[in-house]
Image (cartoon, rainbow, N blue to C red; front, side, top):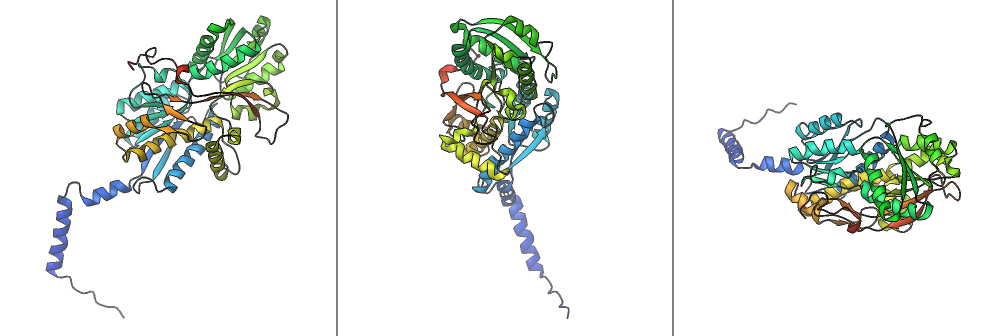
Length: 414
């Protein structure tokens, strides 16, 4: 049996229309307020998913997703959930600028986190500061904190070459010798690392024998290694990254350089060590993070457990951890500011005293550089508890703002 619909009275229709008109006249309308409260908090995440740094970039994404999940599982912010918008910058400054502009203008992101190249992050930062969007960089760079490239929207979660090379240089030159050669990837990261080592060595009496430069993505180092070996350095510093680090250390080992020379890398990558195997034996370097910190640091254990649960028992890498911290810092500032307003979030980030995964950190006021510890690692191939137990933590240089370049040196007034 089909029931006939009851007729709607004229009075009911007018009442409904009147109510709608009243809501529409309100400014802002209740509808728009509700919609704004429910809108996701969008974080753009440009990283080089393809290219020689792809392994590290994909780990950054995995870890960043954990920060988003933890924020959302805790209820988000006033019912608003976070959303990670990942884009492939292809390790190219022009591509990065295009993707960043799309994230801002098309996708309407609230914040930007990402990058895995000294040059590429400057491109992202330039677009972000022109558009007034917070960018928290998770890749090493000295220039991004300098006044000529920096803005109030710029934050730098990662270590920088001055801090990293300084810590590694102070350790290596005191233990392994003063005659030093460099094998350097010929771009900003490599150049800044060499500068950091030279500066650290000034008061230690090091002698720089050579700075031999190679292109990114080189597959054959046979043109460089004989020249270095002939110089008989005490220390060979490999200022390169990712696949370049794997290939150069393998070939230096095969070439026999380890018999007379200590191999040192400013950033000793977990992913590179896993790919390079036993050729990394005895190589010393720096890192922002190593998963075995969980033996002593509670936040490292908590982060590692969350990463393992989300990734089939795998442990996070150093650059993966930066993806987590970069996103978590922004979301923590949103919660502290009780707003997604850019200026309010900036102030909240500047005030953060945090320990997300490695111990105490904070952003320095003048340039928003994260002040944090540097780990000194040595690669091993014996006495390993499991396949991921690839490093020993030889030393830790604790957070110390005095180890950074001064604000005035970088062009900041305070």
